[in-house]
Length: 105
Image 1 (spheres, rainbow, N blue to C red):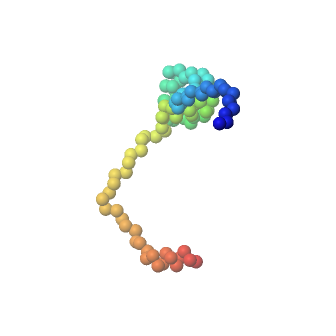
Image 2 (image 1 turned 90 degrees about the horizontal axis):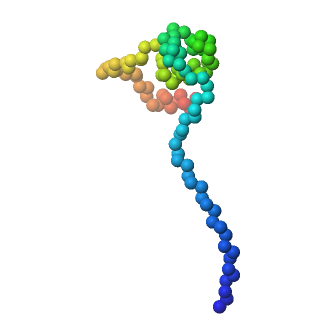
Image 3 (image 1 turned 180 degrees about the vertical axis):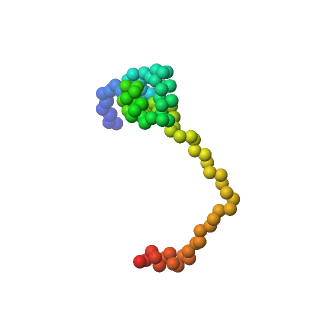
């Protein structure tokens, strides 16, 4: 019987561990918001535009808009859902034949 040639032994590469799939937030790189600034933002947002508040607080417009979004502030009162009515006005349904003729033109 013929003998097989011995292969040179190679080192097995170590596999990298899989990183957990979590979304970690990056630390804020800008100036921290003080309680007084947040209070000014809350009170002034309903009456003033964000650009004016940004000038008063000496912050960028993007940072003010970001904080407004983070605090979930709104300009007006919360919208109410319209009450559902039982009787709805029905629209007249056109015959299918007429609709088909229109499509062909």
